[in-house]
Image (cartoon, rainbow, N blue to C red):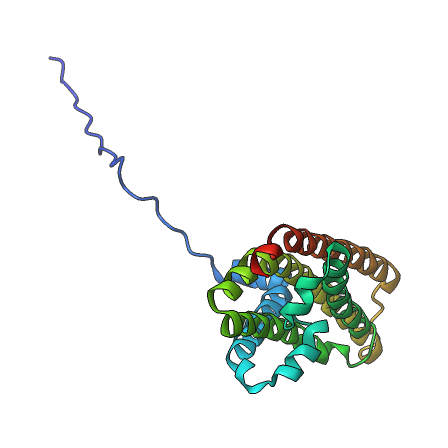
Amino acid sequence: MRGVIFTLRKRRNRHALPKVRLPGIAELKSFFRRRGAAVFFTAAVLLGLFIGSVSVSGFSEKTLKTLDLLFTTNLPERLKGGFASAFAASFASDFIFLFVSALCALSLWGIALMPFIAAFKGFGVGISAAYLVSSYGLKGALLYFLIILPGVFVFSIALIYELSACFSINKKILINLVKGKAYPLKGALTAFFRKSVRYLAAALAASALDAVLWILFAGFFK
């Protein structure tokens, strides 16, 4: 007598959500080993942004106009210029940050100054946004988000990665000096300068984007 065998299969719930797998300790360690410096400098930028946005009321109008070389705090003067003026104003500020970062990478105590460079950039972003909004209201907010923020965002990313590269090469230099370990600095320095050139190109692109947006939209805010 033949038996009949029934195979019962558990029906899959097609609408069930996929299980979310949280990263383990080893994966987190690997991530922070590779990207920890970038995360740290991003946090420094955000901290500076917060401080700048809440402290703008403590600066006089004269001081804010003086700071226009590094931040956008003199709107009437910015609106008078054309493409070349907007590009030069933007790139001059960005170049100063990159140049100081590169100097810190090759100096003995530069590693201690790098977080302050990131925080100062964030401070400038915060103070510029707060100044434009408090002085010009909705018009200032629109101007900031339409014209200034895209270039600032691109350059801030470039600066964070530049500082990360600066941190890496400076750490190798310090280890060579303090512990006497022989890191191949020639190759590391060559890679560092190549990265710096790429981030400088990103700063040029951010400044060009900034200038184009000024030309396209600044006329609406005069």
